[in-house]
Length: 104
Image (cartoon, rainbow, N blue to C red; front, side):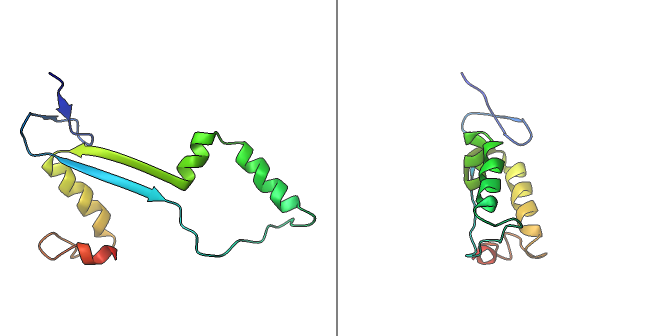
């Protein structure tokens, strides 16, 4: 039998016990502005960007655009995770006061 552990605290999670899948999707955001490059004469700026990109692996470049992870968490870690995320948005962002409206 495979034992499932909380991905945050490592506590074993027994079969049939309460546990959560926390899915995290991170996507790069584009605000419509392309910055001017300091040396943008005759393609030098583009060459600089291409050189910088060549310093990373394909996986590292992909992670700068999109990441998708799923974590299994015990109830206590799920609440701590959610509290950490929402605490910066609003000090009263609790399940009782409603958190969903804060992310839209």
